[in-house]
Image (cartoon, helix red, strand yellow):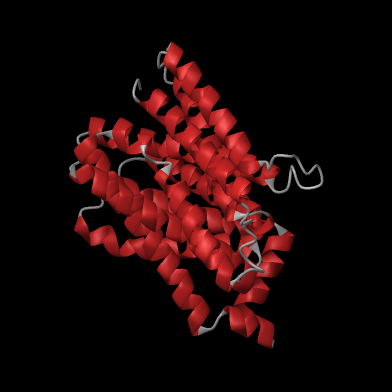
Length: 314
């Protein structure tokens, strides 16, 4: 059961990354465009991998890598906008559910995968769970759509990006490239960097990024201090480590089993956000009433069941 421990460790670190996203966006890097730009620029440091077996494939592979990486950064931008507006325990599961449904739809309509009865039932559980985790009952109509449009756009764009990533890895294997992961990882990271540069085309984003980098007022200096940088790097290390552990778990246990327990990350997010709300109640606006948490836990269980039903067939 090594895959189980690897999966749980990976999903826990991913939950840590989600919570740190919320902390940074609310307290230290409040502009989602600036945060996404920093993530993109950090991707450029993967060029140190070039001497370790990275190959030039062809122009088609290069352009798809750049395009998919750019889509991912813009998806992150909208995810960060959702995180800034709403509770992380709502946004993370909702974006994950939207990404799963989008990925399933793409695999059916564009990759020719067969749709089974259990898939319909699984998607019903995913949609219901995603709805319940994001919308409180009884409904507060003033807040019901808070950040939802950003979650929707971000979830769809990240799913499309991951679909392209999967295509690129398959293309590398089919062409007999020896170091598939290394080549796929580096070239798509170049795409992330290109996506960050593309943010500069938007005047409002460009102004925010320039102020964050160069403005000398006390407010902006705080955003560039050692503590902010340390939290940001810890966040990226957590996210990167989680990706490695989850991919290792897939290698040992298979994608269906690992994805089937993927909702564990949302349970971890709930627990971490609960503890964080004690220290930072103004940042983590998590409700502590019994029925609020019962609804979220129930929704996460539904997402877990839906994921299992879908991936036990695919």
